[in-house]
Image 1: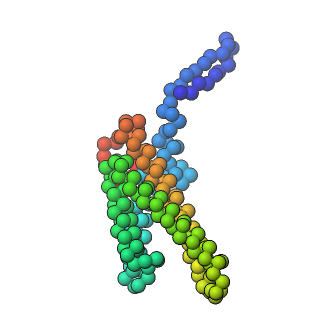
Image 2: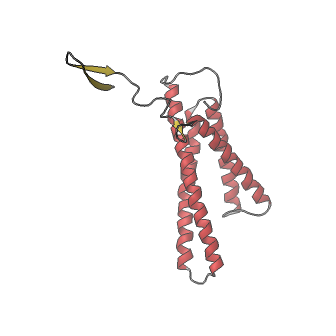
Length: 183
């Protein structure tokens, strides 16, 4: 509820305007400077997660994996499943199907943050390494931190979309009647 005052010739009037808690579809559920709706951003996030899973799978066939082969296989399968669940949730406007993606991304960010700090600590603590080894480890740490920043953006978009879909299910936002992955 918003109260605004207006000064007229006769005196002061109080105008009471009823609004939906400051959350309107036009501004609150947009990202990228108001150009992209969060549902579309979530769709882009799920597509990019699937592309990263495909890239990781191709790298594994060539013998390149990050930490451990079985850990990478687990992460590829888990990320593929939660990305597909998110796409299904977007199609059916089901906010609950976005939760596994949000939880798995938060857990992965925390684990990779611990890994990056561990590598960073031992890069400086272990003195018998050559310069090129330390340089490689620093590049890995920087890439992990960059990945965490990108992941935080994906978590933010998915969380905003979750809130939008919940409010849409409650009837706050009108339903167009047709199913689609984005708005």
